[in-house]
Amino acid sequence: MTVWHVEALFGNQKLLEKLWELAKKRLKTEKVNNILLLATDVLGWTVTHIAAKHCNLRILQQLWKWAKENLTTEEINNTLLLATGDMEQSVSHIEAKGG
Image (cartoon, rainbow, N blue to C red; front, side, top):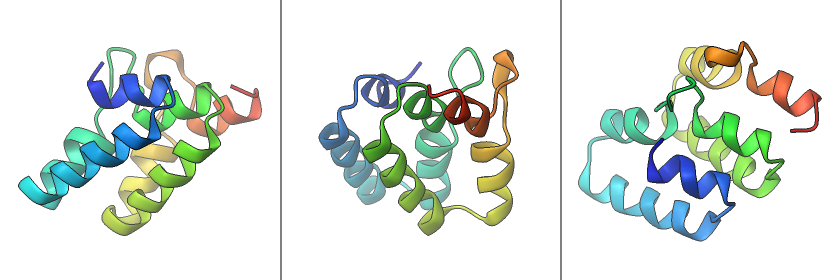
Protein backbone atom coordinates (compact mmCIF):
# COMPACT_ATOMS: atom_id res chain seq x y z
CA MET A 1 0.00 0.00 0.00
CA THR A 2 1.37 3.39 -0.98
CA VAL A 3 0.96 6.74 0.76
CA TRP A 4 -1.50 7.49 -2.06
CA HIS A 5 -3.65 4.53 -0.97
CA VAL A 6 -3.37 5.47 2.72
CA GLU A 7 -4.50 9.04 2.12
CA ALA A 8 -7.50 7.79 0.14
CA LEU A 9 -8.27 5.41 3.00
CA PHE A 10 -8.29 8.27 5.51
CA GLY A 11 -10.01 10.72 3.16
CA ASN A 12 -7.18 13.23 3.03
CA GLN A 13 -8.10 14.97 -0.21
CA LYS A 14 -5.75 17.92 0.32
CA LEU A 15 -2.71 15.68 0.59
CA LEU A 16 -3.83 13.63 -2.42
CA GLU A 17 -4.10 16.85 -4.42
CA LYS A 18 -0.64 17.99 -3.26
CA LEU A 19 0.92 14.63 -4.14
CA TRP A 20 -0.78 14.80 -7.55
CA GLU A 21 0.56 18.31 -8.21
CA LEU A 22 4.11 17.34 -7.22
CA ALA A 23 4.03 14.18 -9.32
CA LYS A 24 2.68 16.06 -12.37
CA LYS A 25 5.50 18.61 -12.09
CA ARG A 26 8.30 16.08 -11.72
CA LEU A 27 7.24 12.97 -13.63
CA LYS A 28 6.07 12.06 -17.11
CA THR A 29 2.34 11.44 -17.48
CA GLU A 30 2.73 7.68 -17.92
CA LYS A 31 4.74 7.42 -14.71
CA VAL A 32 2.18 9.52 -12.79
CA ASN A 33 -0.62 7.30 -14.05
CA ASN A 34 1.24 4.12 -13.12
CA ILE A 35 2.29 5.15 -9.61
CA LEU A 36 -0.86 7.04 -8.65
CA LEU A 37 -4.00 6.24 -10.64
CA LEU A 38 -3.25 2.67 -11.70
CA ALA A 39 -1.08 1.42 -8.81
CA THR A 40 -2.48 -1.46 -6.79
CA ASP A 41 -1.98 -2.57 -3.22
CA VAL A 42 -1.32 -6.15 -2.05
CA LEU A 43 -4.98 -7.02 -2.65
CA GLY A 44 -4.84 -5.71 -6.21
CA TRP A 45 -6.95 -2.68 -5.33
CA THR A 46 -6.40 0.74 -6.85
CA VAL A 47 -6.90 3.95 -4.90
CA THR A 48 -10.34 4.10 -6.55
CA HIS A 49 -11.30 0.79 -4.90
CA ILE A 50 -10.22 2.14 -1.52
CA ALA A 51 -12.12 5.42 -1.88
CA ALA A 52 -15.23 3.47 -2.94
CA LYS A 53 -14.87 1.03 -0.03
CA HIS A 54 -14.83 3.95 2.40
CA CYS A 55 -17.66 5.82 0.62
CA ASN A 56 -15.52 8.89 0.01
CA LEU A 57 -17.44 10.64 -2.75
CA ARG A 58 -15.22 13.75 -2.85
CA ILE A 59 -12.11 11.68 -3.44
CA LEU A 60 -13.88 9.46 -5.97
CA GLN A 61 -14.98 12.54 -7.92
CA GLN A 62 -11.43 13.94 -7.93
CA LEU A 63 -9.95 10.59 -8.98
CA TRP A 64 -12.51 10.32 -11.77
CA LYS A 65 -11.60 13.82 -13.00
CA TRP A 66 -7.90 12.95 -13.04
CA ALA A 67 -8.59 9.62 -14.73
CA LYS A 68 -10.64 11.23 -17.53
CA GLU A 69 -7.88 13.80 -18.09
CA ASN A 70 -4.98 11.35 -18.09
CA LEU A 71 -6.04 7.79 -18.92
CA THR A 72 -7.33 6.12 -22.05
CA THR A 73 -10.85 4.72 -22.11
CA GLU A 74 -9.36 1.22 -22.03
CA GLU A 75 -7.29 2.02 -18.91
CA ILE A 76 -10.33 3.53 -17.17
CA ASN A 77 -12.52 0.55 -18.00
CA ASN A 78 -10.05 -2.27 -17.39
CA THR A 79 -7.97 -0.91 -14.53
CA LEU A 80 -10.29 1.40 -12.63
CA LEU A 81 -13.84 0.25 -13.21
CA LEU A 82 -13.64 -3.46 -14.00
CA ALA A 83 -10.49 -4.57 -12.18
CA THR A 84 -11.34 -6.83 -9.25
CA GLY A 85 -8.14 -7.53 -7.35
CA ASP A 86 -7.84 -10.51 -5.00
CA MET A 87 -11.31 -10.03 -3.50
CA GLU A 88 -13.04 -10.34 -6.89
CA GLN A 89 -14.89 -7.04 -6.44
CA SER A 90 -14.84 -4.21 -8.95
CA VAL A 91 -15.35 -0.60 -7.91
CA SER A 92 -18.97 -0.95 -9.03
CA HIS A 93 -19.45 -3.99 -6.75
CA ILE A 94 -18.00 -2.09 -3.81
CA GLU A 95 -20.14 1.00 -4.44
CA ALA A 96 -23.30 -1.11 -4.87
CA LYS A 97 -22.68 -2.66 -1.45
CA GLY A 98 -22.33 0.79 0.08
CA GLY A 99 -18.63 0.48 0.78
